[in-house]
Image (cartoon, rainbow, N blue to C red; front, side):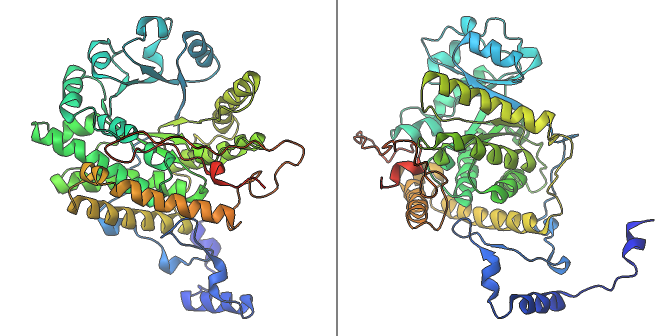
Length: 441
């Protein structure tokens, strides 16, 4: 029996009838009780109807489902050879390495079989990036815009990036550190807009240097953060490639992108020192949302809180979370598992439209670099930080173990920080830890 035959005996319900029934069931309560705002400028309603199904083709875009399944790479970052080998033997299949001029790259990677895993290498300076022999399949991260933003000073130039890009032109080396915005406290709309504006600075620069869109597309890797809003995260990862496509179409309306690699990194801003055993629960839901959204590589971050043994345990849990999601929950089997959900499609549409509008606003005012130098980006993120703090302090949002249900057995750890501000050209983007702004009661 077909699906159509199953439903042939049931009469259809119009949207008007559906709304009337909802209002009847609410018994005088307003529809607003079925509406929530997980973030500023985002609204989620608890009722949907087929007549209001979101049409993804109204932007001239289609969901880019180039993968055969929903599999992803399990990534961890290493600065020690023995730990890297141990992680690879225990299920990690993507490693992140950070290299500076003092790093012995050969020693760090001894015994690592790069041909069988994914890898990315972050460079802190131009000299190391130019003089390190990079494995042929490794992704190279020399994101000068991101480095300057987190430093608060314009230290490395786009020409430095160009030298490294040309030196390693066989590697994917246009890394866009979009995660720094979310980790600093940006809303999802802000992070998406700033990320594609960040990317557009490189696209425009490389185009001016004679690179084709196809060449730029081939070298592109985008990393986004994963925050505490489960359904918003799913929508975020579903539409990031649509936003990238829109940027490329701005240069050539006929160009169809080849899917760039999308990295996901869980956000530290909702990890806590107090009642820290709740952190793996937050990491798990964040990881699930990124995977369901369709990320290609996932890093589950963990707080460096507690004794050495506790930190090692949290590191092991961070890896095992992904193994459970893949090997036991089988989240790698179904492609675009949230596709067709009215709620997810509605959030996706809001994110796509509103982040694109913010991106256009940034571009009209000179682009991301100008916005950074004028502290426009930083001030917008600070506004969202303020809202996150307000929501936590007045208990309109829940930070388990901090503002609600704190562990009375353990002594409260004062996590507030009074770091002296360093002299800088503009406000540096630094990790934002929400717990640090909660008064110790």
